[in-house]
Length: 465
Image (cartoon, rainbow, N blue to C red):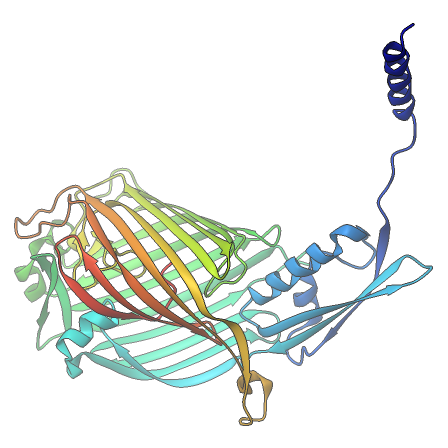
């Protein structure tokens, strides 16, 4: 037999023989002690719940660094800690690995005066500078109540918009720490409100009497089977009472122009969260899916179904460059809703940049946002002498410069002819500067141009995406 044939047979039988050899198992270690340092308020079981490992687990040595990094991210995504570091200690000759977790807790109890502008965003209020549209009061915020990640909020607000609100949430009800629940109650009344949209802007009316009285009660249950997934079922009852003078100005403000509008809502919310941080993510993705049945009756005037999806993605490009994108869509089964339920773009986080002064009414919409940014100052920490506590004197900060482009559309078209933006392709682009610091605070300054050719300088106080 020729030499190539002998070589082929040798390689064949060698490969066949190797199939019966035991596979090489990567080195593995057993998790021993997990020591937690710095949790003066937070209970240990709350910290352990977020770790990617537990005592007694067997880990491949090559995965330890990845598990530690993910555990740090999980802990930082809780509204509990400023800083988290995990030290690794490998015990030789025993195959045991120990972990020490160092935590710097936040300040959890806040009692501060309420001083709020009663507009959709800071820019619409600043344009008029109307000081009479200021609300004031007191807000008690207790995070990490009893050290168990419970949340207790109480707010009383007077002035332009009056409100009384109570929220309590207990995230863990069972021993496995997968089930949680909570309730929220609020009462509000207003002497002035936006009663109609004309020329794509809110038109306000102020009366001697209270134009609106609102109340809602909500109870919810949450199932969080693991770190990244949560399922929430909520039952909410909504009550709204509109004055006769308000309905004279806009008979479509409520369904069939009734003074009292009330209905129940049953909703399901799925969250999938793989972001590296909550307030200003740079890596990972986030998904939110909401399904809600309003009215809970197929025959009721206000019976309709709503579906909403939010997709956000974040990626580092290297050399201090980052990308972020967002796609949001909403569909409603009934398009002829009363005015007070026909809010689409221009509220909360759902807006096309450059259109901050406008609202686009409707039921269905899609929205896309895109950011590219550069870290002028990478995340760093500044230590100051006073106050003498790490909760306040250790200040994280970062500054990013970038450019953005947004687009969106609302349908069906508007009822009033003066509103031209519903049913129109909306677009905006510009440049911005973001400042990120502790307690999840983000300050954005942006210069943008919209599809109408209008330009402006705008301020915001949360991440755009």
